[in-house]
Image (cartoon, rainbow, N blue to C red; front, side, top):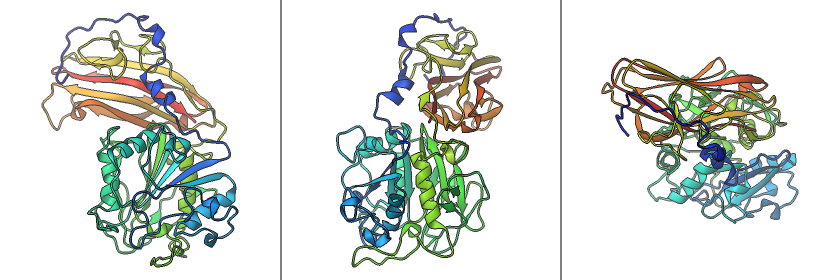
Length: 475
C-alpha cells in the first residue's frame, strides 16, 4: 500500500506458520523443472525459431535439427556440420562434455517437447530477428531465474534481416523490459541502439575471471564488424560486469561483452554476431570468418562463456570459485518467513502477518521500518556456504514511502553478506509490487557468513522495506 503508515506493529506469533516451512521462495526453485548442471554433460540449446537464418544470416550449428549428430555423429572439423556456427558446435561436441540441440519452434519451459528449456542448461539466442511471444519471454526468464544460462548475441541497430520491422537490439531489449517475470532491468544492462562499423574491443585485466581465462583459452580481444554495445546499470543488478570494451570506453558504457545473473541463473551478452561467424554455411549466404580472425580471440570467448553459462565447474556472476563438486541446495532456513520468528534474528515485529503490507506469497513477510519516526530495524541469519560452491543470494523487495523528495535518501535499507555490502536501497527506490534482487556471493564459499538487512528510518514520513521469498542457492 503506497504511503502506508504504522505507529505500532503487533508482534506476530512465532509458531503460527510452523507447518508451512517450505515457502514460496523454495517452491519457486523446486517445484518447476530446474535446469540441473550435469557433472559431465552440459546441455546447450541453440535457437533457430526466430529468423536466425534470414537474409545472409546462417546462425545454426548444423542443418540437421534438432540433433546435429544426425548430420555427422563424430565431427572433427567445422565443415562436418553445415552452418555459420558449426565451428562453435563442433568445438563443444569434440570435448565429449556437451549435448547440443537446435530449437526450431516456440520456446517453452516445463513442457514435454524434447527442446523444452527444462531439458537444458544453456540457451543461445544468436541474433534473433523476430520478437519473442509473451509466453516465450515468460519461459526464457523463468528458465534463467531457476538456474539456466542465457547467451544473448545481438547485432547493430537496423539489422532487420527479415524486414519485419524488428532487429536483435529491439528484440533482446524487449525480452528484458517487457516480460511477465521481471521487467525492472533484471540483468542490469540495456543494449545500445548503435551501429559501430569496426574495431577490436579489448578484454579487461582479470586473471580470475572464468570467461576471460577458461579451459578454452585466454581472451584478449574481440571483433566488431557492424555491431553494438551495452550500457551497464549496476544499481539495478550489482552482478553485472563488463568483460570486453569498445576502444575508449570502460565502466558502465561501451561494454561489448558483459555477464550478469538473474535469480539462480547466469547471463552473457555479446554485441555482434560477426565474432561467432566461422565463414562456412549454406550455399547462397555471404559469410565472414570472424571466429578465426587473427586479431581477436573470439573462439575462446564464445566457448569459455558457454562453459560458464552451463555451470561447467564455474561460479555464477562471471567470477569467484566453484570447483564443480558442490551439491545444489537452498541454504536459508525459513526463507519465506512462514514459520514466524524461526531461523532469523529480527527486531520486534519485523516478521509479521500484518495486512497493512501484503506478503508476496503466503501470509508472512519481513517488514522493516514504516513508522514515520526515527527507527532502526534489522533482520539477519547466519549460514554456512560449502567450499567449492557457486552461491547466489536472492530476495523479493517492495518499497513504499510517504516521502515526496526525488533527490534525497532519507530512509535506507542496507544489505550485507559477511563484511561485504551488497546493496543500499532508499525511499528513492519506492515502486509498486515486489522486485527480485539477486547477488553473487560465491566469494563466501567455505565460510559461515551473516546475511543482514538493516533499515534506518528518518525522523518523519514513513518508508517501508518489505522482504519476502529469500533464497541462498548454491550449485
